[in-house]
Length: 315
Ligand code: SF4
Ligand code: SF4
View (cartoon, rainbow, N blue to C red):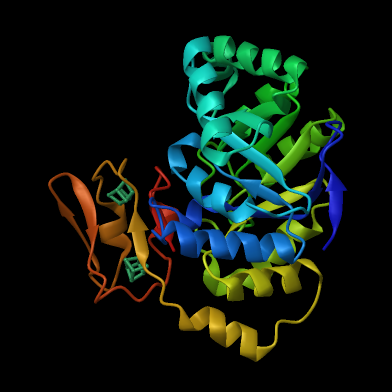
C-alpha cells in the first residue's frame, strides 16, 4: 500500500481510503459486527484512512473496527453543521461514538461555492478552535462542485478538500471531469490536502472500473482516493488495483458473487429523467419519487449519469 502526505497537514494517509458510508444503514445496511469486520480487515491490510460523516450513522462500525487495533488509523468525518453549537455537537458526537479523543480530519459536508463556505463560517471557526486544542488535526470541506474546490483554494484556513472526481464526471454538479481536474490541480498548487471520492461514480462506472480506477490513480495530485467497500473481497481487489497488480479471477469472482442493487437517495425530486433513460423499465415515479424494480434492473448504471441530483447509486 502506498502512503502519501495529505498536503501540508502533516498527516500520512494510505492512497486507498475506506469510504465507510457503504457498509452503513444508508447503503448496504450491514450489521455493526459485519461492517466492522470489513473495516478491520482493511486496516489490517494497510488501509489506514477511513472516511465517514455525521449523516452516515456509521460511527458504531468504526468504534468496533478499531477496538484493540494498534496500527495507524486516520479518521475523517464531516457535518452539515452551520453554527458553532451545531458543529460542537457534531465533533463531540464523533468523539463519543467512535471512542476516539481526536478526529484527525473534520470537514464541512458538501460545500457548493464561496457563498456556502461563508454561510458555514461560524461552524468552521469552531473547527479551527478544535485544531488549536488538538481535538482535530486538520479541517476542510467536501464538495461535488468545481466552484467548491476553487473557493476552498482561496481560503488559507482550509487544509483539506474532498472533491467528487471520476473520469466521466458523474455527480459533478457544475462541470465535467476536465474542469474538476483543473480545479484540483490549482488546489494542490495551493498546498491543500486532496482526497477524492466516487471514482466509480457511485457504482455507475462499475462496468469500466479498471479505466475508472486508472484515471484517478494516474492523478498524482490526489493524495488519497476514497472508495466504498462492503466485503473483504472488495478490499482485496481494491488493494491489488491500488498496488498496480492484476486482479486474479478468483478475487473478481468473489466480488461479483455478492449481489448489487440500485439505490435511490431520499432527496430524489421525482423529475423522471432516470425512468426515461432506463430501457429495462426498471424505474417508475411514485408519489413524487423514483422507485426501482429490482427484478427488472440489469445493474447497467445507465440511469445514474442522467440524474442531476446524484441520487442513483449501485451498491
Ligand atoms: S433522475 Fe434523479 S431526481 Fe430525477 S427521478 Fe430519477 S433519481 Fe429522482
Ligand atoms: S441500472 Fe440500468 S436497468 Fe437498472 S434502473 Fe438504471 S438504467 Fe435501468
